[in-house]
Amino acid sequence: MTATDTHRAIDAVWRIESPRLIAGLARIVRDVGLAEELAQDALVIALEKWPGSGVPENPGAWLMATAKHRAIDLLRRGKRLERKHEELAREIEARQETAVPDLDAAIDDDIGDDLLRLMFTACHPVLSTEGRVALTLRLLGGLTTGEIARAFLVPEPTMAQRIVRAKRTLAEARAAFEVPREADRAARLSSVLEVIYLVYNEGYSATAGDDWMRPALCEDALRLGRILAELTPREPEVHGLVALMEIQSSRLGARTDASGRPVLLLDQDRARWDQLLIRRGLAALAHAEELGGGNGPYTLQASIAACHARARTPAETDWASIVGFYGALARLMPSPVVELNRAVALAMLFGPAAGLEIVDALTSEPSLEGYHLLPSVRGDLLAKLGRSDEARAEFERAATLTRNARERELLLLRAGACTRGSSP
Amino acid sequence: MRFMIIVKATKDSEAGVMPEEKLIAAMAEYHEELQKAGVLLDASGLRPSSTGWRVKYSGEKRTTLDGPFTEAKELIAGYTLIQVKSKEEAVEWARRFPNPADDGKEGEIEIRQLFELEDFGPSEAVERFREMGIAARK
Image 1 (cartoon, helix red, strand yellow):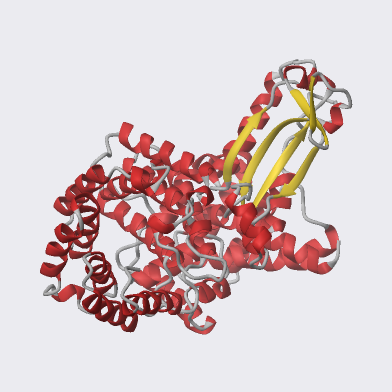
Image 2 (tube, rainbow over the protein chains, first blue to last red):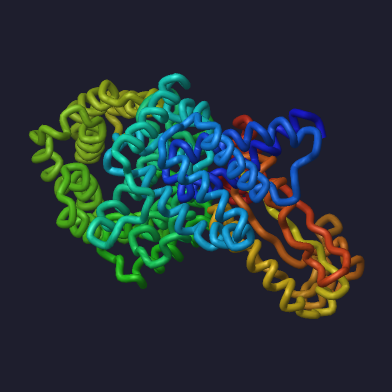
């Protein structure tokens, strides 16, 4: 094995082991930032040693043992002179001397809880949304700062800064490394779900840049969602979110044409939809419903996605159910964006005029000002009604509003089609 | 990217001998790890080739051949489908796969990456494959 091969192998081990490593360490040192530093130190030692000695049989245990030694070293050398750390060092050492197997067993037993604590901490309310996203990908997704920076199209130093700031904020707020208690739990869990879905959406429909989507981010989010579903098997909305992401991912291969241009849902070649992911998504949705989550926001959205997934052709789509699900969603979390989607479904069920009525009402909605999908949908409905000139103007307006180059291209194409007087 | 861990058949698996409890437990534990890490997509064991059949082609002519088939090592007994970030990650997960044969016996797995047609440039032939729904997708 060459040195490069070993480095790549170590990267892979890191991706697999780092979340559990950081989570286990965070419980011992009660500081996520410090836990991550210790895990990084262990990684650096691995990078020095493994190219010579080979990757050990159980690399996770090796990294954990090394990190624990580092923790004791660091704290003992007094680099961190706080009394708390001094006590901690003694505590770790004492536990190691008296009951090494017990401690290791305890770490193994609790690792699921630790991961869950880490997830809640990374998505802590004291952090900005950006900070939560960065920290979650870094600590739980096993992504490097460079990878996260590239995914969000910001320079690496900016992302590094963001992560450092987030860790400092957690330390300063003395955010407890814990799974929140009942009263807080629902709100805190929804923050975790929000972060995961945000990552997913950034991948699924890149808000800026030259790519219409960045599938790697979708995979990262899906992986995080699947991990969370294992950690919180009784939470219906977690399964609802996983179902939503699995079903949406089933369309990734069909969402662009050969030249990379977006293909809209109803124009997609359904033979390209991934049946394995659809099956997984429908199973997760059924699970969410069994747990009584039929009315949660993610489960409702998954139910809508499932209606599309079950239809073999666009004509077979159960628009009546979709209208119903959007109605339920609108009652749960009234939002002009949900209303816009409901309008699209209504137009499919009762014709474009029915949808246009709602959309016209939304044009005076201040929160949708600058939202490119409003003129885009309005243009589509106007075109279907044969009002080509108005449709063209709306597509052009939508094109100036989107920040995504690929989407702009599609919108201008549709505007052009209106000029020729045909319905695009 | 997706990888398939293919478990090769053994004399025992071909004879329909159910694995020992210990092996079943090791397999369950391994797959639980995959599941917890969010990388498991699908997994299944296959019945012995004695319950299967082959269709042989010679030009347009096709002949059906019933199992069992010989050469256990060329047959498969099961598969595990994973979705990971890199080939190296697949290598690391595959390295942890338990010996699929019972205690002390020889077993073998083979790992293959699934095609992602997005890897190819646009071409008419690739488009046709896509329409046939053959491709693995992300």
